Image (cartoon, rainbow, N blue to C red; front, side):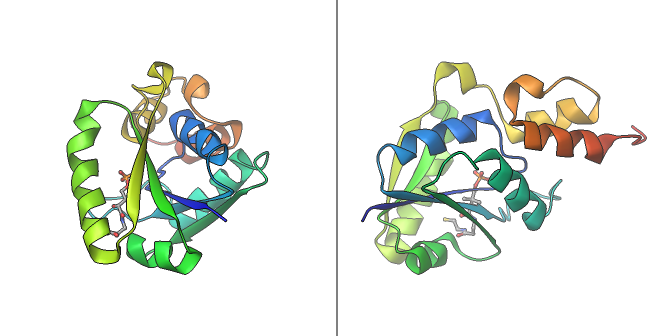
Amino acid sequence: MTIALIPGSFDPFHNGHLEVVERATRLFDSVVVAALRNPQKSQALFDLDERREMMAESMAHLPTVSIVSVSTLLVEVAHDVGATAIVKGLRAVSDFESELQMAQMNRSLSGVETLFIPTSSSHSFIASRLLREVARYGGDVAPFVPPAVLRRLREKFEGEEL
Ligand code: PNS
């Protein structure tokens, strides 16, 4: 049984992430999507439980996908779920440098390989950081996120002083 582990901050989960998960389900028997803390990123918009709930709603149509949200090392999650490989999406060359470094560190720590799936060009500009910014200032992010995420973003920023 092959198991892919797809980690990320997912703050919030967007259509580029969804594309990578859907493509991984065609390559692996099961897929575990893990929302983790990225200590390099400061204040998160959604807490880990909120992110897990939005992701569960957004991927309810994918029977081989399960979701975890944990505040721990990625390689510990990989060990716990018995991951065959870590899978990450690559949007552009600019993603590659930090992804390569994390892949090498994770392999040194645990022996687990990281495989990259290049996102389609229609999703290559979508980034959670930009979605948070656009949504905060009232821009329309509906084309870029699943409905469950759109609803939570609207709730989050409703009536907020800018
Ligand atoms: O979506 P992101 O922010 O690029 O994902 C980065 C993430 C969450 C996968 C990374 O920060 C991570 O693995 N965090 C868990 C802690 C950990 O294992 N850090 C060492 C990474 S080599």
